[in-house]
Image 1 (cartoon, rainbow, N blue to C red):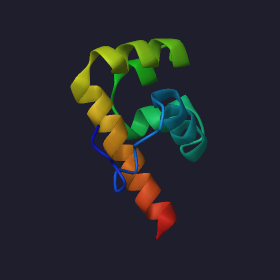
Image 2 (image 1 turned 45 degrees about the horizontal axis):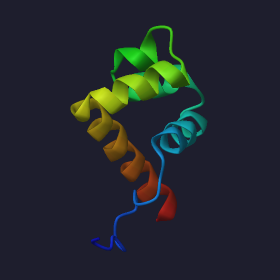
Image 3 (image 1 turned 180 degrees about the vertical axis):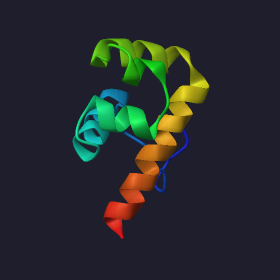
Length: 76
């Protein structure tokens, strides 16, 4: 198996990524303003968000990129 030393998402679970973004953006409303995905804006829940993001690669990629941007900002 390929080692992923420089991948900041390696070992990060999707639910943990969402939880950390929710804290950073002060809840679903703030996260929904940053990422225009329906599962964050209309009746949001962790379960519905995880289901949608696991089935929709483009949306998951957006969330991961946002996480990396926030991670880099905090790290700097």
